[in-house]
Length: 200
Image (cartoon, rainbow, N blue to C red; front, side, top):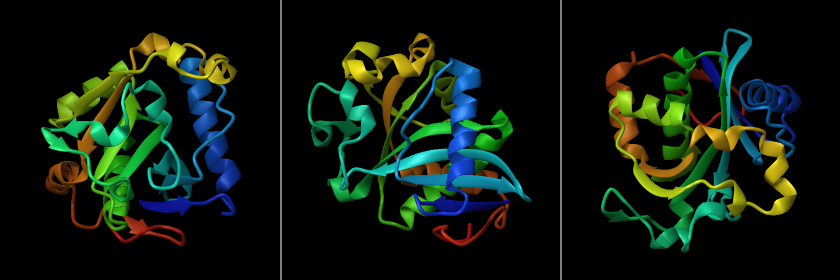
């Protein structure tokens, strides 16, 4: 396995964007027309098997903030206040060929974000993804329900039936996920390639 940190100028950018958009179309009839500046792509040999978008809170407001009823930093996760924006990132647009690739994708996200000084994540998860995290024993904090009418009218229609899957805005600490996934994987599951954060 290997992963790449894919910026807008990366040679694989268009293929990773197409992969994410295809998964969302197949699952939700959603037509995503704008993805985060940074994408993380996971490869098995030369096959793209999973990807997601990453947005740093210090750079711009997070998409999940549309659903919140107060500023992000006024929320607590696990009874601890969220840190400064420099240490928060949003993970979104998660897509995988199969559920079996999700833990590998999350491992790559966790380790690469920790290497960049990120300690907390915020994301919006469908009911299926919520159940997956629960089965893995990952403790997350509910921040808000993700309601379609909270979005600007200009982007509501692109989401297809996504909002029929009971999405919630959740927050979590990367340290917990790192400890959990480290126990579940061998020491050298991944190698990184150009544009990636580190070897896993």
